[in-house]
Length: 301
Image (cartoon, rainbow, N blue to C red; front, side, top):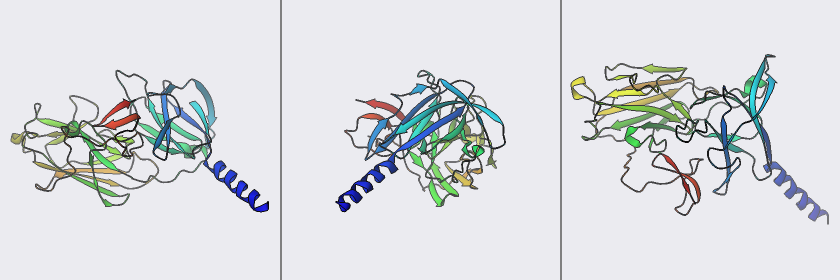
């Protein structure tokens, strides 16, 4: 009998260890939408309705560690099935969608700021809760060349959590763009969009063919391709991270002439592409739910 009780106690303890009770607080000018999910055994469970989730309606004031009052939109989640979950902040406008990338592994109360577009900052430590340094899981080049797909062209890890490179070789067809330039951004951990205007990013710009895409806005990194301008056939992107708790800060971007004949990961939009769930995990062809393929979200029923 004692043995049975011990086994039962162990099972109850294990189940309790999986439960999560957490409140997400976010400071924003307008009430954002929050989409959330968790994944167990490859099965994705939505926790706040279908995309784009639900708009936050509750507000509260919280005092940070410095004794300052801050106003937040908030929503509380309580699950028995999982020990953490993931969220995306967005503006809820399906015709002109603005959203963050995936904000993962939320297991306790978290505090954020959100700019209403693509950028968020985790300010949890301002409220006396320590969070770990950023762990760099992936760095990707996103551009018109890969339909802004954050899973298509991944950087090579040279030094873990410190240095990443991607050598982009342009084809003859790509060397003749209609407007003589291409636009680029960097995506880290399928979550943070880094562009020319990212606060806290140093840019090493030794070439005349590299400049901010002022004409079209959006902070794109503009690469001029016109041969008359001396643009290269291969471009080497190098991202170096100094470490820290803010995924947006401490980066140095160097863009220089790459090495012809050394290719990065190719992206061919004409071929059948792998599909991923919102956690960036590759999924089987019979998966049902929101999938990411060719840089786009699709609902498969």
